[in-house]
Image 1 (tube, rainbow, N blue to C red):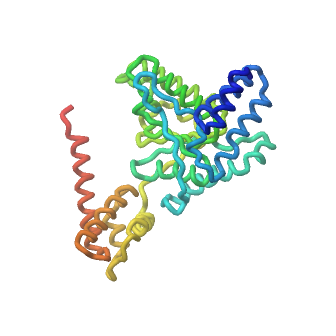
Image 2: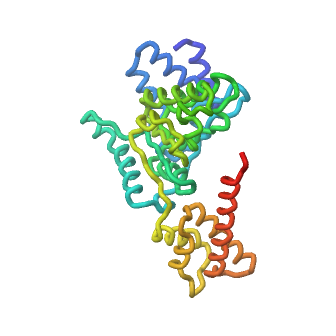
Image 3: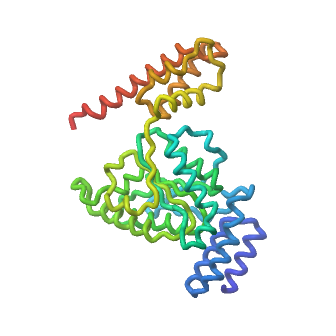
Length: 336
C-alpha cells in the first residue's frame, strides 16, 4: 500500500467518513489480490465484513460506495435491513421447508466445507404476482442477518449500447464485497429468451453476460432472482441456479390464515366467518387478500366502528374482484 492511501484511510477514519474509508479499504484489498496475496486479501475482507452483518451497528454506514449508472448517474441498487421472521408470511409447507433448508445450509457452511460441499447461494423464485416472493427475500435477509441488496432495474437497463451489461458488472463487483441477500426482482427483464424475435441484439448480449456472471460468481452472498413470468426466461438461465422455489396461490386454509393475519388490527364481529371469506376469495393471492383487508378496515374505521364485520370484508373482496376483472379486460382486449 502506498503512503498516499495510508494517509487517506487514516484521515477518513478520524473524520468518520465511512464512504471514503470503505472505498480505500476495498481498493487495498483489490491491490493485494492483484499481487496474489490471497490470504492477506481474504483476512482483510473478513475484518471488513464479518462483524457488520450480525452486529447492531447501522450497516448502511458501512457499505461500499453504491454503484451508479454512467448514463444518468442513478443508483443501481439499494441496501436495506429488515427485522421480520417466518410469522410474517404464509407459505405452502413444502416451500417453507425448502427455504428453511437454505438458511440451515448457510448456518453450517463450515461443516459442509469439510465435505467439499457449499450451501445453495443462487436461487430462483417464480410464481404468481403477490404470492410472497419479495417478502420472502426480506425475511431471508432478516433471518440470515445479511442486508438486502435490491437491484433497481429501471436504472440498470440503459439506452446506450453495452451500458446495461456494464451496469450488471458493477452490481456483481459490489456484491463481491460483503455478504448480502441480493434480489433481482422482475428478473425476466434481463433473463429473456435469446431466440425471442421481438428482442434486439443488445438484450441477447445482456442475457449472455448475466448468465456468465451468475455462473462465475463465487462470493459469499445469496443471489435471488424473482419472476412472475417464468415462461419468458431463457432455458439456459434455469441451469445456473442451485435451487428453484415455486410460490403458488394460497389454498383455502392458507387464505384463512392470511385473512386472520391482516384483520388482527381490529376486533371481529361475533358472526365473523373466516371459512366464508376463504371461499369467497378463491384465486386470490396473498397480496389480493391484504388489499381487501385494508379496504375493509378503512371502511370500518371511517364508519366509526371499533370492530370489522364479515359484511365489510366480503364487500371489500367483491370490489377487489371487480378490479382484477378490469385488469384482465385491459390486458386481453387491447387492439394491439
